[in-house]
Image 1 (tube, rainbow, N blue to C red):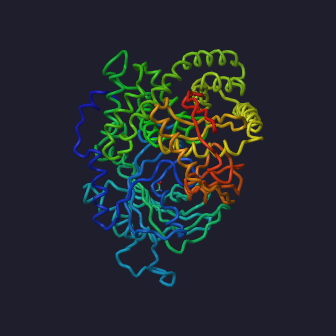
Image 2 (cartoon, rainbow, N blue to C red):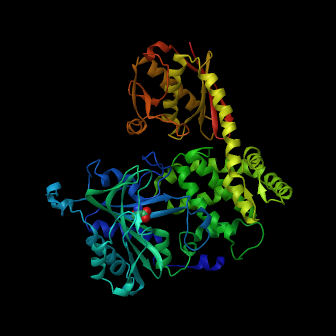
Length: 591
Ligand code: SER
């Protein structure tokens, strides 16, 4: 794609306007605009927010009474499932999903509590389809003939019938040739995670590009994959802003819209060599990844070896690899993140609020990985040469690339695939597991004879750190077996004297307050609902112990602890330094 084309393109239907139009339209139809949820979902069975409906799962399932009947949101979403496809015309890892929702539709079953309150106004298939049509053809002025829809045809395996209600409603608007039978897989959505609401969908295509998905939540899928009809039904729709922008701006590729043009222009600007050339796929991958990276970092997620932190690290390192292949000037991640923040900061103020933190994390990770990347790539070539016969990268070799050179396994696989090599994933997993086992054993030894006073002090310190530094500061390790406590936590920079003083003060105040320490048995999801700190990195049993220090600190932990913080005496921080990349270490004592 030629850069000149991207930069010069001035479009009337800018993505910003499209976002506004969507919100305004549904507000004018009585929908309440609600903020997007965090990219870290409250639902512990999924790692990251992949759809707008996730924050409303409880409203759809009927577990919690919906606050509103009709809602509109714009939700940043992150999906790794399409990562290999990124760089084609339409696939992305990060995107903004615009959605309208309707909850608690019970008009057909008045005995189940049809709402008397008219303003609640929930709707189902016909109204949802009508609204969609009105928005696309009247507000956006898309010629109706460009639209086709697909209908859920039924599913013999699940014993579900054709979605005749959607079919009938669609026929009232569209010509027969515009209505197609979809497939039983593509036209059925959900649940996200282990269980949840789900149902048939009607998909909307403009010029053959799928832009909008209307999900009619009318079933609940339990953990055993059994479907039960929901008494109160709901509508969940999702339209990708990037694809809509492509349609409205007359482009085939999402990357040719105004959403990506400033990022691609910056990439062009950062090229050490040629100017005004066609940007290769690496540039598109980088343009996609930098948005996800920026948003994930803004949530306080730090690159790590597990869970959300791992997704971020994998994405960052893949972006760095492509930046390296493009031969971009140093600090390109930081520069590109700034473009994303400038572009979207107005609509997502947390990007601006956390700008410094984002930049420092990215600069640090780029610095570190670039140091080993070139040597890692050389090592990779050596490994390949040695494995020419069977074309298999052994588990041990993949482990070395991960352990010594910081190559996420997916990156090794991707590089291998390019040259038709395979990676022995199972052997790699075994090597990783062995390393973890060693780490676990050493941790066990150190927590065996814990000093309860220091242990309670750690919980207070943990909470104080989060209060002063932000929720990204999470425990990464601790030792409370000796006289001095050691507490490791995730944070990108050195702490200032001011911050250390403040943290010390808070802990000492909590000691002076003589807070009672209580514990109870509960479940992980209940504990999370109560706002307890649970370490993502850890696997918890069904029943866990929640330690509560006078309502100030709530943390899942096996103990032991003191009964009252008054027993701790005085808390003093002795030192603060780096423990590993992105991890700080505080040593402190009580006297
Ligand atoms: N949840 C549906 C989707 O992700 C519609 O919003 O496509």
